[in-house]
Image (cartoon, rainbow, N blue to C red):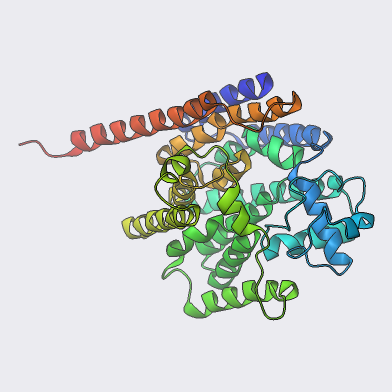
Length: 393
């Protein structure tokens, strides 16, 4: 916690410098990227937690290669005990089938076919992480932003911890979404649509960005993307039924770091609030699309942030989706959120002490309070700027 707090402070100071300095030399950017690679590799060597999600990834990939459906099989089934390996016996929520979308499941199968281990999956995630850097550099070049803004992504503490350290599938979806945005800038509309569809097939969060593709991709591109996503689910169908595993249980029963959801749950069902969260993201994307015809980084960051604000679960690694797009003054609250969420790791420390899996309220007050304060400052400065630019009577 101490090292992460220090890293967060240094990261925010670096962001301040990035805003104040329009350009950096190529040498500075290269050295910065080398440093990022060094600490990613350092975290790569750290063993994942005994019950981290990555153990489920290994199990799901193994199941598929053995001919089982991860949406139907539960890991603690006594009749399947012989299928476990030392790396899968401690996976979490073993009483539930997999909740991950088909794109994620097929990725698990592909990687474990090369070598079935937690470390191999972590290496694959780090490769995706490094690939995002190169795609992001292309986006920055085409959008006229300084190349140093790639360090706002690469230096974020969440990346090293959640990609190289714990290993989360989200980074695969982030890569696909970043490729989609880069393709939009190049007017490769088919690539943009298909990459977006595949990103949604890894995790459902970016579905709220759909309005941003209105009139930026053709109908046939969208249809092709929808067909490809549909085909990904064919291997997991059961007598013609499309399965979603334990996704419904996740929405109904799982809770973490979600104060807004907790308040709304007093007056509405979990499913209704989850639907509302998606609606909020959609409306935000529609507003962003109507506000400007040009592609902006904030347009891709804010809809997902708005949706997460109303989500039943807000794990730190969910914020990875917004990292490539949080590089403007308007996204400063999101940038701060990616570090203010770090105190939630305290609950993992409490669990090692045998305490209940219960997030202390002070962590949420700190996390969301800092974000709200940053948002208020951004709005205040924008109001002052508009007042100064308006003609006087």
